[in-house]
Length: 112
Length: 113
Image 1 (cartoon, each protein chain N blue to C red):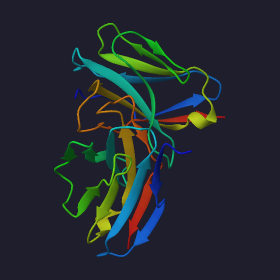
Image 2: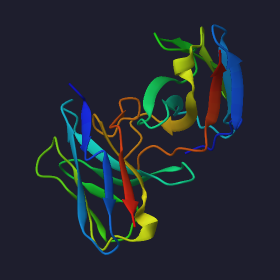
Image 3: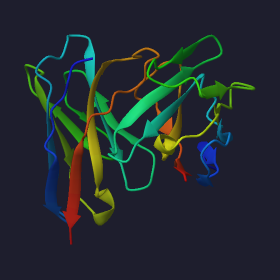
Image 4: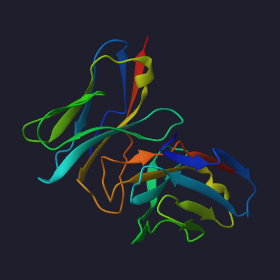
């Protein structure tokens, strides 16, 4: 799986959009970009994934650059409950039995 | 109506003991997993299992063994517990080997004293 690079931590004001970047310059053509988050003391939670088109669901939007070497997860109106560690994972869909590989992620802190 | 449930939520035990953590999923998923999150917060896969295949992460000591009585359950047995086994253990499930469809349990915090 391609490696990803994320900032260690970020702050965002409550009610503002939180933009979380991820670099994945070695991504392969058949690899998807996935985002999960882990709220303190809970298990990781799936947020969104995409291949090359931008994606949106009820939780977030995912913007993937045209060259697919980086992406941004957008939480449009951050709330205090969005404080969590956010993981960007690059993987082929259906991925195989060796599971998800979690990096260090970005600790997003939403400030009141 | 929890999708992936683990018990117990907390487990404190002495070195050398044998313990089990139970996991059940009601999602009808084919594949279940165990992950370990250590004190540095890194999440690492330990086992992947469906009704056909068990994949073991080669770094996992053989004191750890998964047991699956049926498709909805994957329990984790740990023999001769060591201090370094202290961590949070997460169970997860997915349809086939899918990535987007991972659902995690809320974790079991194991403390070995």
